[in-house]
Length: 227
Ligand code: NI
Ligand code: MN
Image (cartoon, rainbow, N blue to C red; front, side):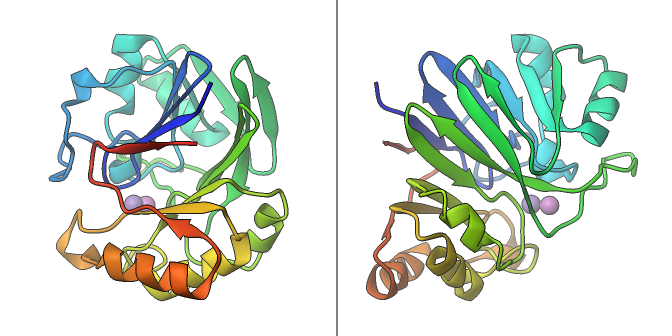
């Protein structure tokens, strides 16, 4: 069985494999590029990289409706518990856990993580999925960091990298990230949602494929690919 990866714009990504639906950073309400409504999304697990509203997004509503288990750092879990969520699985950076569908490890990310009410959200993270023999690195919001090379040493099938600039890596640094991670494929994310992060993903794809041996897939919101 293959692994299906669907991008819903910004950082919101659905990974489906082995009957499990894993939804990352479900920012739909208030997202001008979102191709779906929050109540159209189904999930068994929701992964939250950090507390900013464009990542935490509709997590609470979707989790309450679907009963999905939310995976995030310990600090965000405490806050989600106060919002009435019960199906919670805390992890923290560097730690992995074996779920019925595969494993996920939290990676570092250089960013912030304040929650909507300004509660402390701990350190932001990215996610490394080990699922159906595939390795997927979702960097979420981060600046470039050299330790991406360590993540690359694991042999990454798909990297999902922000290219928007302003809040995260821009195209130049995201290209350097591809050179550090050396994924077989890369999907650019976190661009065009807001004026400050307008980018040209087709031009970026061209540079990736000229300067590295990785293939880049520019997706339309709602589109996906199979691994
Ligand atoms: Ni952020
Ligand atoms: Mn963001």
